[in-house]
Image 1: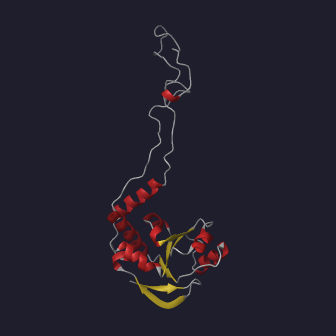
Image 2: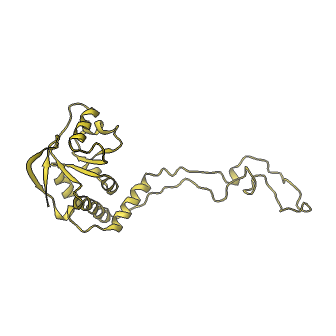
Image 3: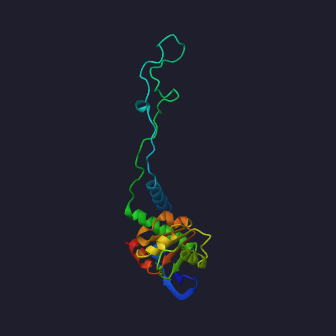
Length: 209
């Protein structure tokens, strides 16, 4: 599959790059995508939820009424879950939601996500660029030139593009990552995936292992 290379003004440079069918042209595996996205979202959870159970409630331990003769159920503690202000039965406890996935499965999921975007013509290859200083306005100009200012976009650039990353942090519809930070969720969540020309080789070598 061949894709035209654009510059940061959105114009065709006249050059084309060949995308590896092994990475950008496979038959997508939906279940691998599901598992990888599920793991990514699970890893975002803090898991700090907590509610007090009856042993943790502050309250009197005296028997609140006599055992028999009241016509109601027996009750021994004001901290019982059946009373207002009592402990919660089987309440949430702090836990870790993360789980492990096979490396080959994660690699398959990312290739599947990239193949879906390539098939839907949502893949853009751009010349390498950088900014002298972090400036959001400069990044907005690039988005407008590529007609991405009203769309969700994912920029996959080299690791040395710190100024571009800092320029994009305030924009909620655009995300900048390096080739090593590429994940299935971000690829599928973007309306357009913009890949720097020099980054293509790194992506293909990482996912072709």
